[in-house]
Length: 211
Image (cartoon, rainbow, N blue to C red; front, side, top):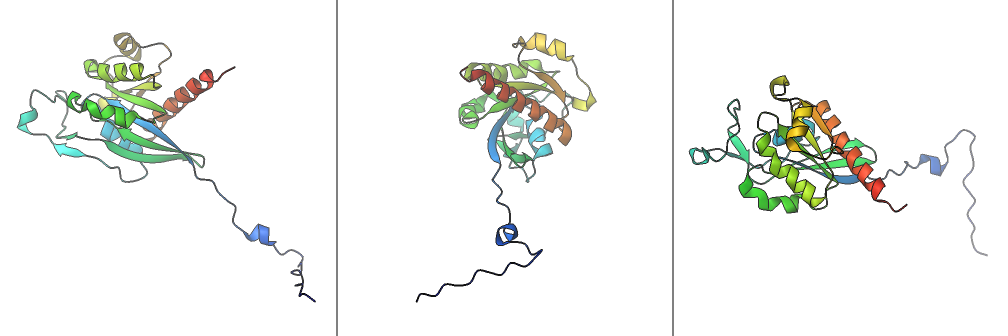
């Protein structure tokens, strides 16, 4: 006769095997966000302020050769520049994790933008309100690409050179494009700006669904 093992005795109050096993946790959904903008507007600072890992940066020292080519503005103490990209990540909650890719700001590195933007859910275009001309290429790029984006006006020294309404007028963006003020050095401020990007991307996805 085949041996049939007795079932485990049930002890009152003892946890069952199913209860003893740890609950299965699903990995958070990865979401790619691009941090873009002109030269010296605070893209590297933005990624570094919120990344939960040591951010990957490709900073190189600015030299005399760049004088007249790379202009970070008269009040900037910037001595380095991004020559490839910045990378960082932040977990929003148990279901969502953002992977942040910062673009180089100089026009000569524009050929990299297509690769950095591929697969992105949305973008944050960082703007220095005292140098609005520098952000036009980034705004034009994402409008042409059809990628949802938010304009984040960096509050250098805690102030804006122009109001949000003046920035919107100067950029001539669609009224549906959010424009927010944020501090690239402040983690919570960067978080709030990224949440606006997520809301914008979600709204676009919902509206694109067939009715």
